[in-house]
Length: 200
Figure 1 (cartoon, rainbow, N blue to C red):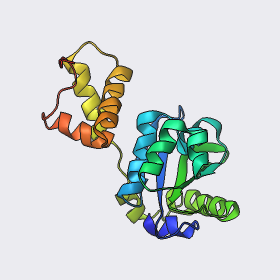
Figure 2: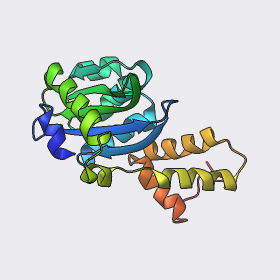
Figure 3: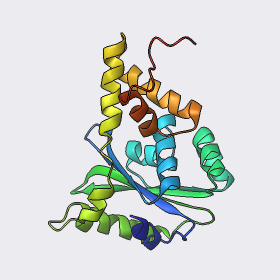
Figure 4: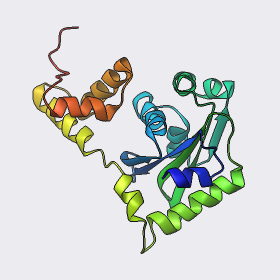
């Protein structure tokens, strides 16, 4: 995925992320070009705001740079700037008019040209993800988030909470500790962390 993110026009100081969604716009799987892009994507998942969230809801491309990140997404913008990223853009991934995912790029300085970004997203959707010879290396990089689903189930078994509440507990702990939801989920699954019945 790293090479593809650079083809969109971002510099070597940037990166990219990909989210696959179900028909209800729920996140099914993610892939990122590097740890920082992965953290930027997970920050959106935790906060519920950012370029990929906007595209998932609206189906329209979005972009922001510099202080525009905080103007558009106050909490997410601050988090992305803290990661050293000053530009973010996202476009929908579609097949026959139906949106099945979102692709985003991040950079320390600039955004890709919109035409190039849309062209790469279209090629990614048509050839790499949906084509008969889909790229096995990309699929190998995708995290289907099994550990987050497993941890959510374990929280449900521990206390009287809903699935939404269980996932919110994981997201809140990840935000509080400045880590990813996957990291918190792994600790729950490994019995190193319990989120219900904890004293506040």
